[in-house]
Amino acid sequence: MTAALALAAGPAGAAAGEWPAKPLRMIVPAGPGGSSDPTARLLADEMSKRLGQPVAVFNRPGAGGNIGMAEAARAEADGYTIVLSWTGPLATNMALYKAPGFDSRKDFSPITKVGCVPNILAVNKDLPVQNLKDYIALSKRRPNGLTYGSTGTGSSWHIAGAMIQQEAGAKLVHVPYTTPGTATTDLLSGQLDSMLPLVIMMVPYVKEGRVKGLAVMSTTRSPVLPQVPSTTELGMPELVSDTCFALLTSAGVAQPIIDKLNAVANQVLADPQVKTRLEASGITVEGGTAQQLGDYIKTETVRQAEIVKAINAKAE
Image 1: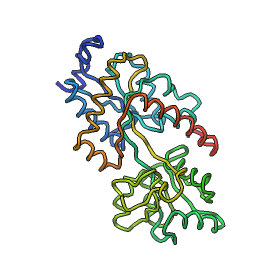
Image 2: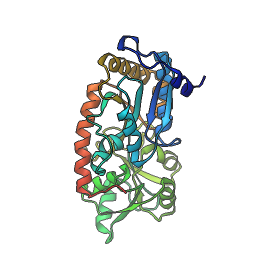
Image 3: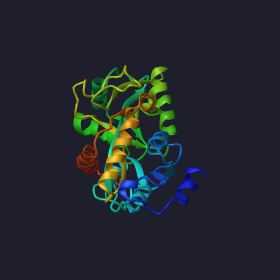
Image 4: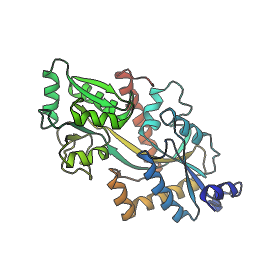
């Protein structure tokens, strides 16, 4: 029996002491094949081993993650529906959309933070800069500034560039693309000066010397590109931009179930093989308590709202 069929065949519910008495579903508010999908499927497989029940992954793309998040928010508060989300739907969308269909601070019970992937400042190999300070200085010297590509208004790529403009005074021109592949092609050909994707996207290009990686926008270096300095070590700790993944369930789920989900998720994240696989995808694994995740969501929602307001971003 597949996980999805087992899910449909399971009992209607179970008391906290009997939980889990049937399969779980993990909603991913994005389509299959995206950066979140391999992480979700790895976590689902490993959690199912420890829970003794299948954990089936359901992709629910649309509206920047809002459709899947709204579905997860409406789920019964029994702990059988969890969601793997990230900074965009959890924090940025609260300011970017007038009516996202959920409130990440009220409609969910946090489980744990999985980890974060920083954005990287990547530039065309022929751009006459060698580091972040060179890049900022060159942008100010050029009459029209430097271009940077993104996957759309309000995306982490866009916000990362806007932060460099605001915090460092760089003169940058935002160029939104519909697909990351097109932006990468233009960066490689020199049609685009720079872009700020998640670090994992640039690993082969930086290693092959086809682009220059100037800085990862993080407090520490990335394990997938350890030769690239972090913005914090370069003396710009205010330039931190990343996508953090997290596990949540519906608001109102019984505390013993939250505690068990947290314990199991942290066991998975502490597994050396799991950690190695996540780090290979660019994720710096964190884990931690449900309270720590709740505090992160509250703080990050405020921070993202300030950035969205400053750059006057609106959902497309």
